[in-house]
Image (cartoon, rainbow, N blue to C red; front, side):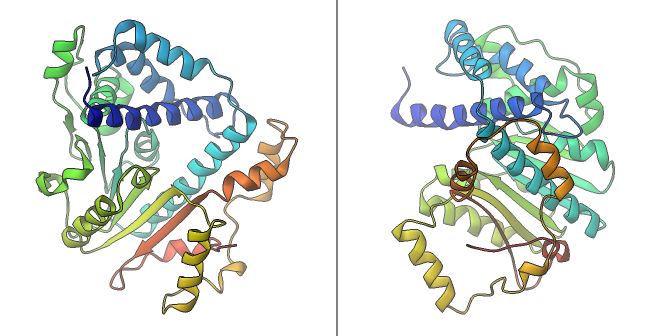
Length: 325
């Protein structure tokens, strides 16, 4: 029997499985070019090990996975998943290109495959750190340690691990460390207890958060931001979260930023589009979307936010359009 807090955390972890299924669908529909060949490796680990997670049995895990991955995703969902992945990838690549040595910290890295795609393209001068719930980390760790390609990408030399019981899964360490990659099972609500040995405090750092902060309280969000503020000298944030600019609170927030002494993006309209016309034409041929208004409605409920300190500047962020409509 799960406690109320454990039930809530299980629901949050399930959203990562939903996100993985969306990337799986989008990848199968050929939105990602080149194709993401790492998604199926993570799915295979879920198929083998979800049954050992708290609150699951072999029967319920199988039922959950069939439900999630056999579902036909709407073209709207595939389009949104593509855009979300593409724009974050663009910023990450610009960040890597601009600085000689970088550190990327992913809050709630879970089933995300971006780290593998980064290491496939950039072999040196990158440290990649991912945090997530311990059980989610164990599933990703097992995906890595049982696959020679993934192990080679991150520089892992550990022996393959066969997990066949809940007891073995519980005893498995929820961490994986190499010279350039750190996968850490940790609750972000308890950052004051984090082992900081793997974090470079003086290296230019990009902190990524994709639909993570929305599951935390305002106080927990504040604590997370304050933690990194106090630990890293050269940091910036890239946050993708749901937002509601058309409701009363959202409109009031926009009004507050308009009347406060906050730097805006008044000159951004002359900057580069995120997606080229050629790429838009390509994805428009993949699936028919009858109603463009549905896409606009979906995208208005999500935002990509970037922030940095006055003493650290990432020039590459200015390449693209940033505007609030």
